[in-house]
Amino acid sequence: MKEVDMVKGIIFDFNGTLFFDTDLQEEAWRVLFKKYKGRDLGLTEFQDFIHGRVNSDIMDYFFGNSASLEKRIQLMTEKEQTYRQIVRTKNGSPQFVKGAVELFDELQRRNIKFTIATASEISNVEFYFEVFPLKKWLSGPEAILYDNGTFPGKPAPDIYQRAAALIGEDPKDCMVVEDSLSGLRAAQDAGIGRIIAMRPEKDSEIIRQDQKIEAIIDDFTDFAERFL
Image (cartoon, rainbow, N blue to C red; front, side, top):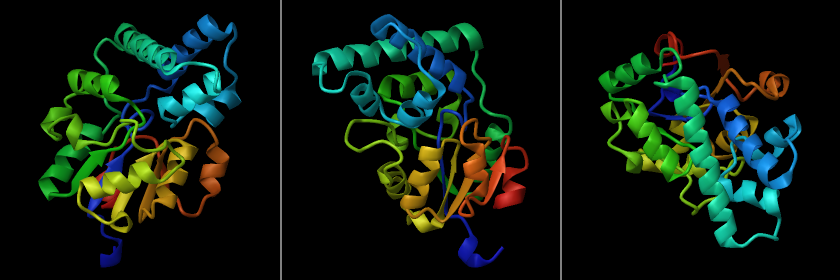
């Protein structure tokens, strides 16, 4: 590999990338929409308005301008509580995607910086630090990028620009691993040097045809040998 291609930092999306929970997220949103809107969500609605988006953007779609800030906060809180209960009920002890633990250990051994950039908000981030062994590699929520209400959601590039800054690297020297189309576009627009797609459940043909995406993977097995 040429020196210009060497990775100085890696930024991982979380949901659908390090933890396969797309179906659990969708179930929580379905519960909420059924309760408050009296209907289910369609597949295109998940892709166009929910996956990879921060909760404030989803609430805009959910309510438009008709709901107060208090109502929005109440619903966002309820959805995340529902999601966490679903995770605990269906997963018991949630597991990282295959190979992730070994990859994190290898990155630590090689002194390659890495972080997580997620559209999740703080209550879910704290939950992830509780149920996954994240503190083995990352000190706490302050060591990752999450939705704190100060930047737009994907496909805006802000989250990956800020994540690169958090680990002290230029975006062009970083790699992003991401599963959603909106997240992959965010990485591209952020100027990320190398982009890997994690087995996209949606828009797979569009993603496969994108020449800016270096590879599509099913898990993190042999990731270091293939890409670092």
